[in-house]
Image 1 (cartoon, rainbow, N blue to C red):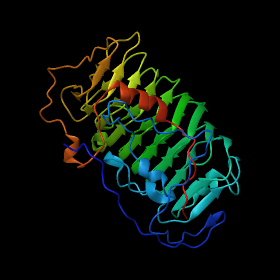
Image 2: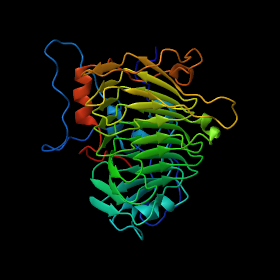
Image 3: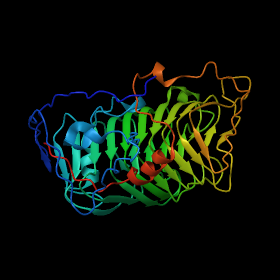
Image 4: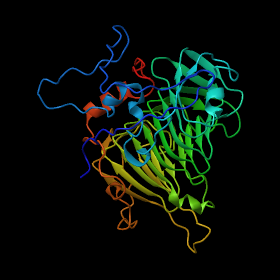
Length: 381
């Protein structure tokens, strides 16, 4: 049932007028040969197992063969995210917070852009960096860390954020990536996030069709919030897929969910401080083949009751756990009495996704291949 790789999708490139720091796209060759990996620091695939059983793998290996192959390749609810596919390249040439050649200047351009980096290092953000629609922020080939503040995806669509680090965001309500309001078709892939004053990724105010994949979360309290509070029942439209992520000793909210439909699969959550996953008012969580490994706090799933403003009675959410692995004395904490007959199933929304059994091999893989990776920038215009 929906447990195989989604097929490749093909896109056409459109030409756009030139901008500062921008080069127009050209038609790519029919096939790109993958670049040779650097000899010293690129992660290598795991060796073949001795028993000939195939090891689990992390999805999206094909997207690093050509620059724009990310577009439209997300699994799950964010699968339509095109990013800046149909726009020219924009080259970030400075670590400055703003000005010519900066990331901020590229993100404010209204037309589609595929943003790449010619520098490595830390960009100190003095205020939220607003990302406009049809942008890919592609950190492959460099090591870029955002600090001070974070990215804000406000009333935008078709944004892809790949291979960046977020650390040390300071201030009231400062999230690493804040997605609100009314944003859609978002894919956040292979990012490392830690140590912000509020959330690492927060999805609220009717933002939907979002996939979070291959990310590493660490050194943080309120990790991921989906649905801000019980008064915003418009958040019933929110749909999020979270897969192949590593929640590494973070305290809570992996995620915490109100109203939304959330599909969790092949994630590894360990050593939480309060709970792993929290279902609150009317949330529907489908937890499939995840690994939950408790530290001192043993219960993985928590339920919180809240009242929707248009309902008479307060309610909690629903969780279905299918094929999850509970390690090191973890107690699921599932409420069998909550009605799950009306709960969504991912196959009602998308036909294919890559899910493997929750095993120690998967756990080892997620510890190694989540978050920022030292991969070269793929070839391509």
